[in-house]
Amino acid sequence: MPAYFDHAATTPLSALATSALVEQMAKIGNASSLHSPGRLIRKDVEEAREQIAGLVDANPSEIIFTGSGTEANNLALKGFYWKAHAQDPQRRVVLISAIEHHAILDPAEWLDEHEGAELVFIPVTSAGSVDLVFLTDFVQRRGSEIAVIAVMHSNNETGTLQPIAEVVAIAGDIPVHTDAVQSFGKVDFSFSQLGVTSATISAHKIGGPLGVAALILRRGLDLTPILHGGGQERDIRSGTLNAPSIVSFAAAAQESTSKMAERAIYIRSLKKYLVESLFAIFPDITVNGDQTHSLPGIVNITFPGTESDGLLLLLDAEGFYCSTGSACSAGVPRPSHVLLAMGVSERDARSSLRFSLSFSNTRAEIDQLCEVIGSVVHRARAALARG
Ligand SMILES: Cc1ncc(COP(=O)(O)O)c(C=O)c1O
Image (cartoon, rainbow, N blue to C red; front, top):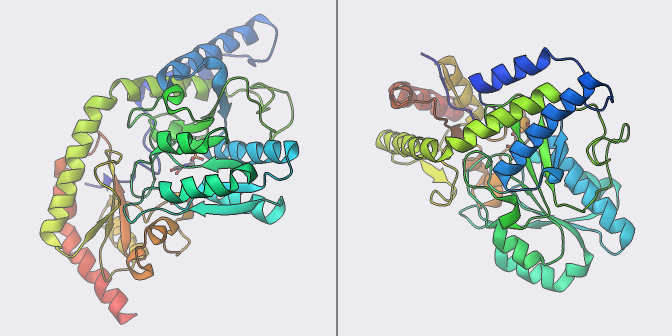
């Protein structure tokens, strides 16, 4: 029986989210139209907005719907940079953690290459957590030059949770953006308590549809938009509102949040079982990242002497699906920048796999994986040794 261990890449649409999506798709109207059908769609969108806002502890006006987490991250980083830089040309520094997803890393590099920004990385510890000593020192020395700080809420490759409240305290009045795409629906997340300026959440990581996400942006703030058009979403994100996906996103958010605590206990126990079972077979494996301050379902393991892409494909042939890190960079045989930033050697970074579990996975699936993984790793090691 095949087993899917790649829920951090995307996870199936839940039954509730599917019915919300299908029901909404049957309705006619554009949420911006003034006629009755349009107003009814607007009502559905605003109810979804209120529901999501309630779940992340934000004000409904702080939710800006976007077409993806990638878009929300781009909007925050570029929007804050352009705004700060326009107000004070001295503010050129874009300060991001060294372990950000490509949806932050690449726009930051783009700002550096094309918009006159200076990109600075906050290093991380060997456990994969941002170095607060570096951050404090940097903010003290060059705070007046920083346009925006971005530190993800949890890392998508290792699952390590980041000390966001501390980052916010150190940042003072510099805007702080957090990419909470992997955290929302998996661990407690309160926008107002964290005190960040903005945060990203995405529907398809929590049982909602692909192609809808949100930037949560502190009330009263505006951003230089990327898209110009109909002026939807406080004029920050133009484009006809994707009402079916938004309504379905809210259904998935409600479901995953209400079941979060119960699921987290189960998923964490499953992760422990996976790690213990793998250690019993391979005493030389390493688990990367902090396992105490972590998401319940993500585990990143180095299998020494293997090439991760080869290992992934051998497992795929046996019906077990996992990842070499971020799906967005899969296919490009580069060692993970996240593991390298943690001080993992390039050789070990090239020998690492991410398993991401959900409430739908079972111990039996892990037992089945463990039945084949010995021979799979043996073949992967032999392939690497042959060159
Ligand atoms: C941490 C993180 N940020 C951003 C994204 C991108 O989100 P989306 O797929 O909605 O564009 C992902 C997806 O893998 C992610 O894991």
